[in-house]
Image: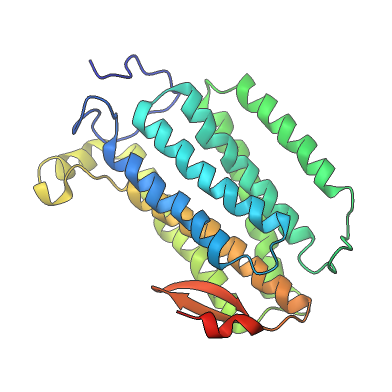
Length: 266
């Protein structure tokens, strides 16, 4: 018996339970949640929030919470930590939808002054709906997928089909981020969930994998997608406001420098 048994989450994952320690159910999925998701939020707060607007700050903070909640879920497979992972996933989409709606609004003059209140109401409704059906993972999966699809289509409209499209560099970062999410991260999640026997036959047999499953790729891909989405919407907003900025790279990660911060580039 592991420390957290019996498990109460409505979903389990492919990584072998308690393979490394009796106190952490899925060790690799736990650390990869923190490094693959939360770390992106920290980087965003430090290096990709040039206007310090609440929308971006909140988005990055929620990204950190997703990683912490995901680590709690994988470390315990307990329903409380499951909600601390899945609810912030809904909240981050609401943050991104708000960013899309107000990406070209003037500073201090939002297009939709009542939208924050509406988003709070939607978040409360989503929370009630979530706890009503938490025991049925498919309800969360469908609801999150619908919100995520709406967000993705809106981003594509801004990046590719708007009259005044952002710069090519921002467009390319946005597109590459989306492709990684669709072509790499999501397939890894499905393969890990529905081909678990094949996955375990490899990762548990060969020491080089140390028991790691493709779910850790989902974590890093998902975290990158959150960061890339908020990052490119921040860049787009700077361009709409005609504020000079520069995209630099910190160990290969794109960051934003305002014109008067270029001398701080690493």
